[in-house]
Length: 89
Picture 1 (tube, one colour):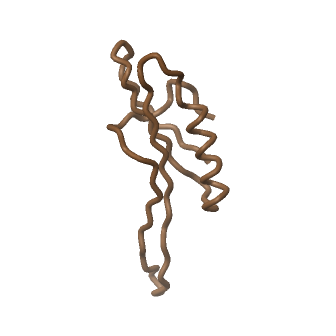
Picture 2: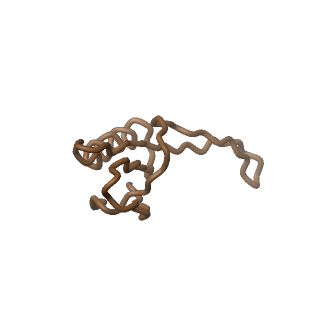
């Protein structure tokens, strides 16, 4: 489980599922799927970590993925910029 200080911050974006088609060395075609949840931590709002992790849990179940990514954009001016990546799954 991630702590409040172990998230990666990016500019604002929407939750997405990414698909990359690829071909294995034996010629079999596959699609790699990745899910990303993006939250914004705004001034005077609670830390979105718990709600983001809850959504990711649903993505893992629904999409049958083993891992996913949560990015939190910290828009609180008084807080230092976090730069730690947290893997979920």
